Image (cartoon, rainbow, N blue to C red):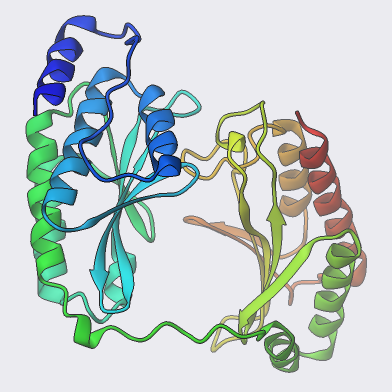
Length: 331
């Protein structure tokens, strides 16, 4: 494509200088998608733009779907009546380079992805570029060492994986219905009386301040924080809706506990509140001081069988509400 060749030529000579004109990929786009893609590409350096455009154009030409969210570009594949996510293209933020976020171990929970195909795919990708692997995804940072040739190899691996999908094995999406009240009651019934009282206090405090409580399944009650788009921070510039705290009932050998979202002002991929770093630090300091706090790997949990009381629940509620208020008042 001529526009891509012009862009690649500029990338080799411009270096870190910002280009005056952002060239868009040669794919079908709605006006809203065009704006999102333009905004994302405008934040990238020339190399990242070439890589992103190459992946989008090749993905679309192969018959797959290029979609957008407010902050990312998604590379999807049709699977029966729904779409499966394969990768997302993420713009640079908070001093971090642009990145390709690949769906990783989470694909093993989906029956339509054969295990041998996933093994081959992951082994191939590991040979293409260094990865930062999380429990659900793998990230490739688009630094100077990443090349257009590597992007083409990655596309080939993704295309091969997409071709192995077996739609007939895909589980139908769950029905959309108001399940939260029933699941909340079911979750509370699984807990001893002391834990029920703690969970109810946290729920009442959060809903009393206008917070959202959701329980899509029995065993987990989520206290969600919905944020606005901010002018300050970096990842906070896009609106977010995430689980700030999860109330988990006992399961097997794991006792009842609270699971707290962590590094909300420092995480490479989840610093949704980097607009209020001091408030996040105060909140995390409060959680760390609670009896039963354990941080292992990517999980930060507070187990409720180690002296956690209603007074501790009250302290936690106040800290959560202070964090919520700081986010709401941040520019």
